[in-house]
Image (tube, rainbow, N blue to C red):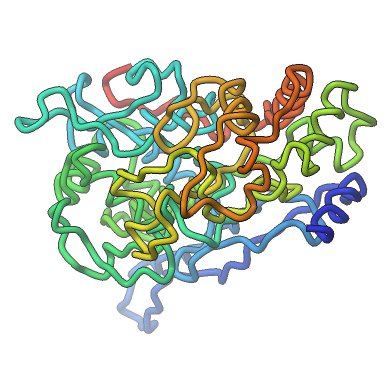
Length: 421
């Protein structure tokens, strides 16, 4: 803890931006031909991709990107993934009232979270495309986590961290997905097949979705996009999942007012914001234990943060690890863009930042699995004054990265024509 305080105390001296270039072997799909007097075949030109550059502040605080060796990031792959991310036909449907894309639920204006103001899911609770069993759609078991800075997460995805490099499982009988190597549960690529097949999401099949993308004749020209990314026009699930994962990994947010301040690009925070910062980074607010990383604003680890004493959720951390001490335990999400990502907690119980602060101030619930870092549990919370809550919320709002929220590189492509706009 003392070491962390020391690091955070000197965070204002973080150096300026540098560019990290993701290593990528230049891949060639060229075909060699034996020359002869009668051979007039035009050789296929070499195929090259462009390494995708992830911007990041320099310094020891910035973690190593988590990029699978079999899916290096390229400009062409990210471009293809962006189209697929926003294409509702990936759900295997053409009807406008039943199309669903990744971008249907993950809105850029809400830090790629669903948000309270989602036009399809007002209030922030999502559900899958209706079927005979669920004519109104099956609700998702948890509220969403934002899709930002996942490229730096090495500690599992989803609230319970079940998508992890150590997970040996393949496919899902419940989702009717066979136990084949391409349907692993190891990384962001895994989230694609789960999103397509889950009854509480796109509620489709892998074959139906892939065939739908193959059949598209309108813009974009997927054959050209796949060829640019992979060297030929073949459209497969493996390529779809890898391209979408590349786009998601490109969603890096690091340019909030707070980030600019610690990089000394702006001279100071407002007085109330700075008071909130000192509360946040001290035992008084007790936020820094789980959200103290000076760049990511999360440890990406898992905690029981005093929400309940009786655990009925079948998808908490315990559901994956089977460790009894993981009951009621969930991932600590990033607090970057936190003012835009309501509702809060895995079950969406809090609708405002004030409600979240009130929870940590005077509503903590003790239990057998409460995390030891919850230092104020014996008092029911940190017992902040109302003025201190105001200051803390003012600081939390400095974590909003408007450059990221408004970045056109992350928005729906203007020429994407699904027939429904």
